Image (tube, rainbow, N blue to C red):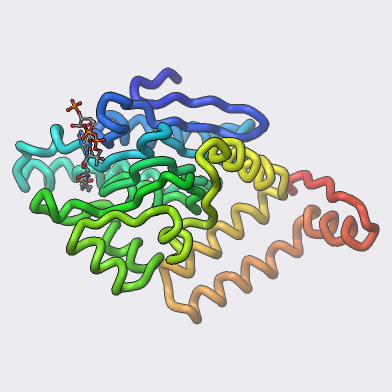
Length: 258
Ligand code: CO8
């Protein structure tokens, strides 16, 4: 499908989705988020895709929700249209892993979008922030909740109350991103990481994603029980037998997703 605000390419079992509104630093409007939800649904259903990378430009992953689109809306309009609610819930339903490859600004909704992905790799020029306070609003697609879980209350509170940005080094130090790489290496590294994930047994990849996400969505006891049940059930797969046999025979495993 052709998109107006995204560029989507599929190669080597990886779908690369580029946010493409350069005139507005990839600000997220209804069209872009609707198209992103659609592209993720397509990627999830496509047998030729086993991992997804979302990226922006070198200057901006996304500089927030589109302020022009929101500026004149009333609270009743926002509520009745469930503004961005439907799209963000649809994004979170994606079963295949999603890597956010962030260069430049990831602000407001852009930071929230990156945090909704499964993990964030960033370039050394990345800047993260929740500057909504400067607009007389607060974060609206999970920023107050997810940033707090990533970096802790003190840093999250300071960022939400002051609107200050966090650079790449601080983001890595605080656990917001998994790794920082030089800008020129961001896309090659994100794609190589995605191809590595794509080479694993898809059964265990999807199970691992579900289990890690439980750490955010339930109590420790419930999460550990959920993980143990998934762990036990993976012993019914051929890929578990193959993976362990390959280790013992000192060879590479040949996974067949069954
Ligand atoms: N929305 C719309 N347009 C934007 C946005 C944005 N968020 N950010 C940048 N642009 C536009 C600018 O208006 C400008 O357009 P034009 O050339 O037509 O004037 C163009 O992009 C380039 O931007 P700048 O000239 O400002 O570029 P600079 O390099 O000088 O500055 C910054 C870059 C620092 C990123 C600056 O653009 C900026 O501060 N942007 C706004 C950041 C911001 O406040 N983001 C939060 C937005 S609110 C939000 O995300 C709420 C999310 C929750 C919604 C959930 C609803 C349920």
